[in-house]
Image (cartoon, rainbow, N blue to C red; front, side, top):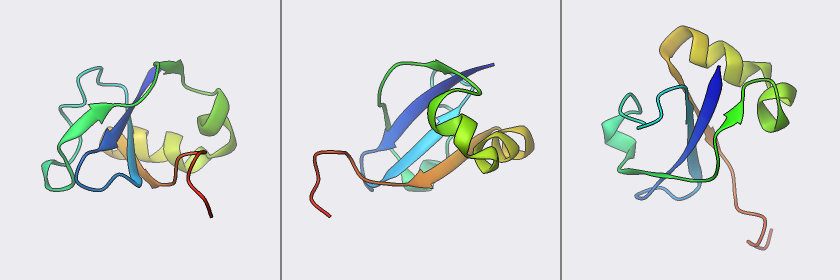
Length: 74
């Protein structure tokens, strides 16, 4: 499965992961959503260290994760 990454425009700290290349299945109430990087095979990078993402995608079709961009100060 290929994992597509999206970032919420209204909540920039919120990222969505989904197999849907358009992100159409991401929750509208936390969107709009914009592509945030290249698609990756499921099981690499963040997904490989977070089985919760894999489980959520299996259960609901998407996973939401709060995070920050590397350039933001802590």
